[in-house]
Length: 449
Image (cartoon, rainbow, N blue to C red; front, side, top):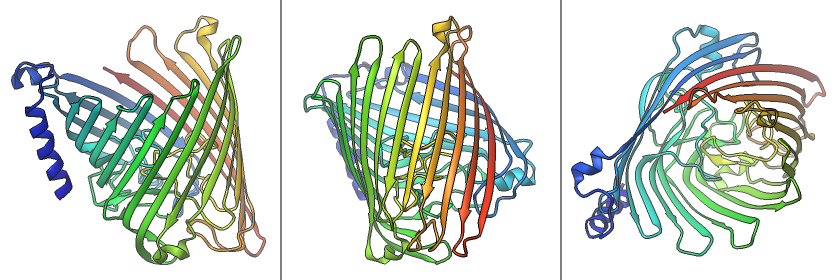
């Protein structure tokens, strides 16, 4: 990639000409580098899934994984970082492999980060493989392999109370080999493919790179404003549930306002978000030029309690593509089932009530609870989109609970228990109603060092 080569050369030249650096020699930069890591043992159990081809019934999977990272000290503004991920799924049976081939069934290892970083003044540049977490280009960290991207990231803080960020990516690493379009069961690799969250494609699709520009502003006390625009070039998206692929550019846009006002004994917050997607003419039949409007009111730090109520509404005839990578989010998304199970659907309204409690207020430090109740109503479809057929409709009802314990006696050790039950009531074009239930339990034990 010519842009990346030029950026590397520029970073090296600028770095060698800089005057501020942490390490005295290149050898010291490596000696003084920092190692970090995480050990993971996860158990998942589910009774059904809505994905096409998955077998109903009880399935479970057990993962043991490691994430190991190293970043050198700064030398003339330059640094180098690498992160390795490895996973084993030793007891997965045939049903588990089918149900989890896009999520957790992935044995092996991958080099998820390998970047050259350069910092000059208030500008930081990273070139190479790296984790990215922006509203529209974002990795999903809820699966055993974190998603990663290859490209260039720039973050600048020269403007007062403002962060400006830009990204270019030309390859991605999903969470399993099957997601990346390869034979199932192996660790994911970097491919010239991308996952577009909110469309029908189960696997990453070919694309010719993507670039984005965004900003975060906090000039007004208690108010945060965020905006981002991303364009993906020549994305080969599936144009309907059954139709073949077509290729064209895809534009994503995102704006958000977050306001938090300190009250006497608690904080009151108001959030608003507007996002959407637009596709080139070759993808018109996909009907993915939708937009989503979301709002949320929240209370936090009320003697350990927190609560929020969220609502989102979508375009009548178009789905919403929410992000590149599966780390995008919506106010009405839920645990485990994620933001793409219901929220991108055309002609849908979603609502979520959430409550939380920090048990440190009861002298149990490290223990927290989150409970969610979410429902989505999708009206009868007037057109066929990438996710829904004409004349169909659906209702979703979801309950979720999350109990997390950061063990105070073992620094870095966290355990997490999550449970979600979801009912889907789907009506086809002939007005035949089908009900499907999904119950899923996750147990995660993580040790960071």
